[in-house]
Length: 230
View 1: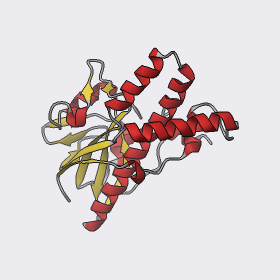
View 2: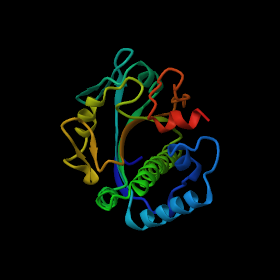
View 3: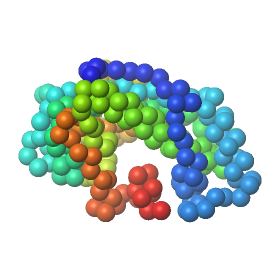
View 4: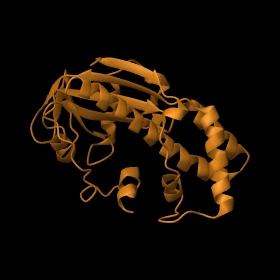
């Protein structure tokens, strides 16, 4: 497996579930009316022509240090018990960043200037699903690379979830050059562009993919939690 990689993701390579967009908009368990469906589809078409999702990753050796920490190189990550347990059996840890790009942010700012808040709401929901679709593509690609070396991968986990403090974004970004793939980390550890995702994945012959611990982690804004609440 390559120890480092960066690549663009073609929109056609992404698997996007429109029901997830509707769910983030508040349509739980049913499709909205024709007018809203048309607006969402039009938004999807516009955004697909505006953005180019990008990904970068590093594959690093490390080890579990205690019940809630990982030692990766000179960096001690403290993702908590849930994530540390999910990292068991790893030979490597894939640290990754994914973004749909600043073009999305600029487009949303223009919609706000036009005071078109319904369009802003739709764009935000679609952007969240698009970012998760880009992560899913990265995971599929990582799984394929791991399989070529007869290894498995875990689920992906991000700072801010499952008791992993958001401030540890600084440590995650420390594995990359400044502003990797155009992502800037603010002083409050939020990422810009806003539809960006960071995280870690365990890779190894003894890795077992664990179910997401949504019965323990009740973060209401987590898209994975929303999927499992259906």
